[in-house]
View (cartoon, rainbow, N blue to C red):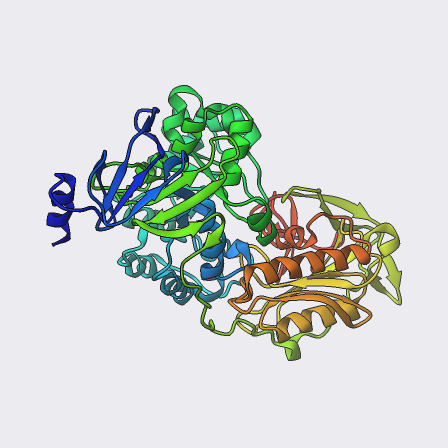
Length: 569
């Protein structure tokens, strides 16, 4: 039996499978760095010091650390399939991720989650699942599925499930919504993640009393400190979209370190290739003054303890041999990665077998025959316009005089007022929300995408109706994706054939296509650094202030749909 053999190797009575020599062990328990040999047997740490082994690997003075654990990430946001994400993250030292499949669940429900779970099998990456708690996120838009407590109870039986994902409906928690409380009750014996930007005082007390244990959406340091002092885990995120490291890192000093994790939340293809994954976050943390061993704890021991991951997060006899050899503790350049004692990456090269994701169920069900058109009848002197705030997912609101042609309000690129449309793509309702937006800067053409948080309907913005429709139709023809169109011609495109969220293409090709999409958008006059990322949040009706859903213009502050024109109904 494996257990008996592990003990025999630990006692020095049998040969180890692997002996790592010439390394400097980073002890995340004590904070010390020690020169010692590490023996591995049956995929686990057998012990320390010299002993016989079938294979000996000289680390050449590298620092030997536990494998990194990302405590909060939406893998779908990488735009690539799970096997391609693993191919990018594992060579950077990532041994495990804790993911919330909120995005694909909004498209395919429980079957989408099961699809992702199947993809994780056999990868040299542990993919641990926090089940989505809020599908759909709100009743103010049309999602592809709904997950009730009964669905979640069935899904929690999977061995990879470790808890309940971010509870975004914090007003429902605070005010005792029965459906929300039923989900919390069903997972009260497992970790429960939160999502409550700005929540303070007695309402925060109620949120915690209901069983929520963490937050990754703190607006500022004082809010985060209050949450930590009341017992919450604080996830300090530094991803492609949200970057909170500079503001929140002071929390990780002293005793507060025990309640902090470093996470990414999302990572775009180009960032994975050029910057890396958690290794990039570690570099940034240490550059800002955090002790390197303390930083490593925030991506190893702390997430393992928070999610009750037995045998992970440290280098200890009996624990899994998920190990990373680092050339230094400043740049965090990864020399080797071992998964359960097997070498799976060396000098940035992924050594495991490459897996191509299988097809996913179709996800495009736009009922074009039910859509009368995109025309907007001018019904007043002033029109509500969504205002993009660069590098933010919040938006503003302006009242502008519409450009009117033959009684219709139309886009006015000369004033950077474009038309924005959300086509319902899940249930064939024919719903289409139409509004106007400032901040994209397009002089002509249109952009379209099926990455549109949270319900991921088909979202498009453009200078004229013909190009908006052409871009939307092209995205539909690809089975989901992103496209840039000018005068009916497709300038760049990215197929996202898995739920309209991820591509089965190789990571490098996806990154290249993303660059071409951004270049094509700039060619049309767009000044945003990442227009498709910005576009993806324009339909998110839980982040202030003015957004657009398939049911029309939505004022998040008053939490209701509003007329395009002031004084309208």
